Length: 247
Image (cartoon, rainbow, N blue to C red; front, side, top):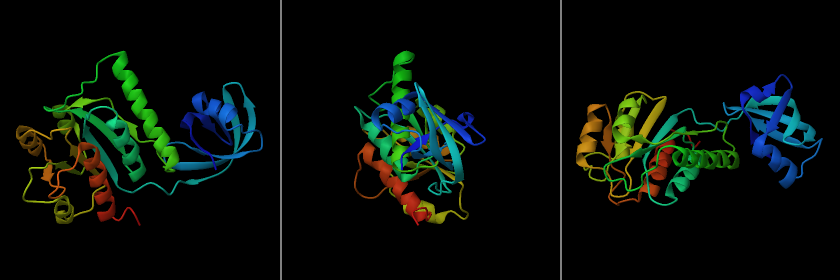
């Protein structure tokens, strides 16, 4: 069944309204008509069963026939702080991490970041594109929320602002503890975890030391060096498995 995210203010009582690109997609691409059944999601974990009542220019009106929690969201909220990679790798990272259950993605610039996102209109266009990638991945994987992709932050801003229960920085030079050991060593189950991945070239030693001052724990992903577009997905999958979110 076709699935669409709608803002909660577009749902009122037993009526829902679909506008914008999704309305156009319903009309011009899917060719859905009155009487066809679809699913709406409010982006907050609630699914609505709906029947199309009216299709008009620019909007689709539906009757809501039932609702239930999506049942696809992990209890654990994981945030990825991702060093900006080259080319279109960021889109791949966002897509795959959304499929794996990420809660939010924060692009960051580090000492070794090559890519620089310009301020103003160009930067807004890039962030908007990333958010669309997240939305499409959410639809495909039947997520109950729409993970947010933030505007890029500096390394310093990101590590200081993070409020996750556990904060783990994945560093290829870490020799004492693996991600698995870090996860197993904690005494209580967290509600949220943040993981930080550097861009191509990794992180400077000074950056890791600075992060530790703000409560971050460094960990290794093993003896092999992973590409930046692989590391976040691998860490997220490992965390979800260890925390029994893949059951």
